[in-house]
Image (cartoon, rainbow, N blue to C red):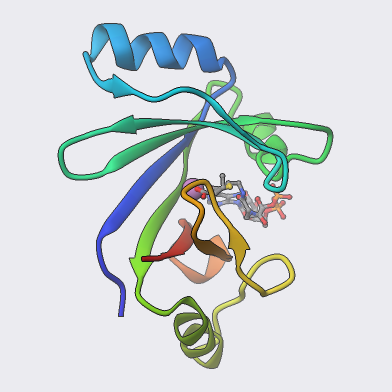
Length: 134
Ligand SMILES: CC[C@@H](C(=O)O)C(=O)SCCNC(=O)CCNC(=O)[C@H](O)C(C)(C)COP(=O)(O)OP(=O)(O)OC[C@H]1O[C@@H](n2cnc3c(N)ncnc32)[C@H](O)[C@@H]1OP(=O)(O)O
Ligand SMILES: [Co+2]
């Protein structure tokens, strides 16, 4: 059911420092910051030949990554995003298998303008999983 790895997200305490690291030290193609108020984060996408890195920084008072950064103040890998062709079919299949879908359970529009959902990390070997419809 799952397709390509769309992105690996890294929560960072200092977005400017993280951007400089990827742009200058690693020589990566770095996109402009995007505020995503519906998701409580600011994101910067780093384009790699085979996938993307999503740098995440909290936005607003109720950011879903605030707790993660409190536990990991230097930052860390926050989630992995897999592509699926039909996100509602994927959700229903995963729910039937016992996985917990986070939030309302309904897809939201993600950073690429496509529907996304999140699955509880405790149901995926400790890794928070995002699904994005292709
Ligand atoms: C920009 C849009 C979009 C895109 O298009 O790319 C995005 O990527 S938005 C990214 C941010 N949004 C989200 O992460 C939404 C889904 N996340 C959540 O609902 C919450 O963050 C969470 C996963 C439910 C965690 O909530 P939190 O309140 O921080 O922690 P808990 O105490 O409830 O955590 C329970 C348990 O899980 C562990 N945990 C938490 N976060 C992670 C993580 N990222 N990876 C692995 N494990 C995680 C946490 O440590 C707790 O474990 P125990 O301590 O063992 O109980
Ligand atoms: Co993401």
